Length: 583
View 1 (cartoon, rainbow, N blue to C red):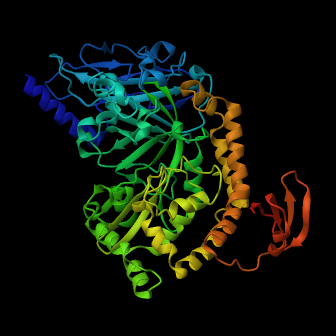
View 2 (cartoon, rainbow, N blue to C red; view 1 turned 180 degrees about the vertical axis):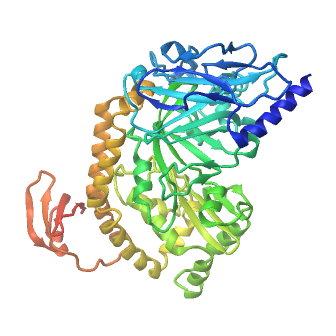
View 3 (cartoon, rainbow, N blue to C red; view 1 turned 180 degrees about the horizontal axis):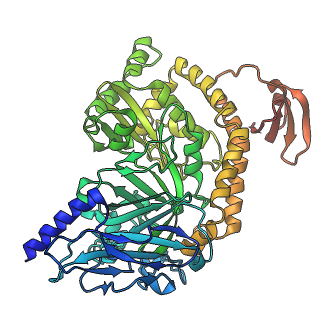
């Protein structure tokens, strides 16, 4: 009889993939204004195999024959909320643990058919319901709902979210279950995406912890894996708009809490600014996450920067992609053989020699690495170049870099030239931000006058277009408009940021950065490398107190007579830039 039950599970799973779920609900998951009554029916019953019953859960776990028997339609009210309170389970070392008094909840219903021997004979049907009258509000961002057996996420031995068995108090911030990797640490989950426009995508997939040191945060980074084993090889949905690709092998849920400033939006803003520049970057959008019906804060759903991303973007087989991190120190796919050979050649190269420059251009996409480098410089990324580097190549394809994780960007260095110091680092001692290996390519490129002059022109062009405040200011304002109403709930859930006042102050810092720093970097870049800027348009100059010190129509040469200090230049075009005059 057990073998027969397993046969029916497989048979019904095959039928369900072609004809829909075996257990059907009267209402699809998604947003609803008010409460309603939910009915369940069996769409397919094998002849002579019954009678079948439906059992369901309301806590996110897969149903068993011991769970509630469906006898009559269910009124979806607050009584249907899960009582598990998973948010009270510590998911970080004790000195970092923050538990809110309560969390928002939504209703999650999971149901399946069972035979008379108690064997499950159908796939599990899962729907999540976001009911305005119960929440007391309408969530204005798309919602991702993950449902999984709670032990797979929170059990001491096997739970993905907890310090657990693998935690060592001597290395509290680098050990724990959440630092484990590989397929054995992938957990099966039900994934649902509910957009504010009413579109829905629901499927089973794999879930893993994502990121590096940030795994120790309470708000975990998560990776989603589509596989045939789970029923679907890809996530097929226009998550990032109708113009973007509509099929993805893997996705990432990046937590708001990884933002260095607490604004949560640096990477999202930088990815938008990077659009149409000549390097690879990630599509991303903010969502609200619920896990087993409990509020888990603001996340960013984005493409995963892996070999499948390269395959889907550039139409090369993922099997042929060499994907490296940390400038080749780690291999994520393929081999480092080709890069290691190029690196050894770079150690003795002189790009002032035309033959050397041309050889490098045959191996590296110079235009792409130029834009990638200038982007990192303009955003003053404080977590690069030694970290957050992913590069790839394939047969017939030159080396390119993928732009990701700008959580440490858009906040002024003590000295804007510091990032240029990082990129030209050649000392033998250790550095927090950079290494000899991470700077070799840039040191060689900066040794070429040909590259420097081209990059200077390209820098001015990018600043006038992608980084013009007339472009970035409205972009920032739109981002703030989209997430502002959700930030208080993120604060109550994770205490990151610490307050709305702190969040708004951090947003103002970014706004000030966008107004002044990109133009200032043009002058910094020219001075650092001894380049001569072409004649510029006129400007008026003001000191840090807003007092005009040079009239409209002034030129660059007139700044030489100014005492040291911070000045703001208003160009004839209306653009404003910040400049520091030193001794």
